[in-house]
Image (cartoon, rainbow, N blue to C red):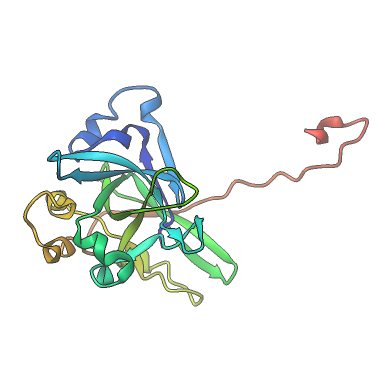
Length: 234
């Protein structure tokens, strides 16, 4: 299940798909590739119905866990039950739906019960992908304003992601990527029904995505410092 992705820093204020590419044409800080994980603050594209335009709103990835709002649970919403599961149904039908632009995303391969091998999926010729998210607000007694939090919508995995299945775990889910033409429907900009919005959530097949194993940096063993070799102190 996806728990990490990358995006360009310049996409943090992009509200339209066509802007995502011109926004990275400059040099410097905005060209950085940034990694986002669960509990990070994401730049979520939403539709402001009162203003009649799209906005980018920062939200925490992961709804607050019951009894401990600092922990994330859940972080994903299954497309098949997004309109019926109590945790998500109200937000979905109220068009509390957003989009997050990504450059790559990660999926895990369960090598053993305690070891997961991370794989990075590149989107081929696509300079960016648009993942569907759902969001809500939560009143937290320790916070002066409600917590804005979001969850990633998932769909059944395609052949590439299913290839990560092992005897220890099946890789059966992947992020719900939206087609360019489905943005308005998903965000609730048009008069589309909830059923039409749900129809935007499809498994992406027949594409030129590639996948590589994520190599972990080797750990350097610290040595005990001595008078002749004080380097171990640092």
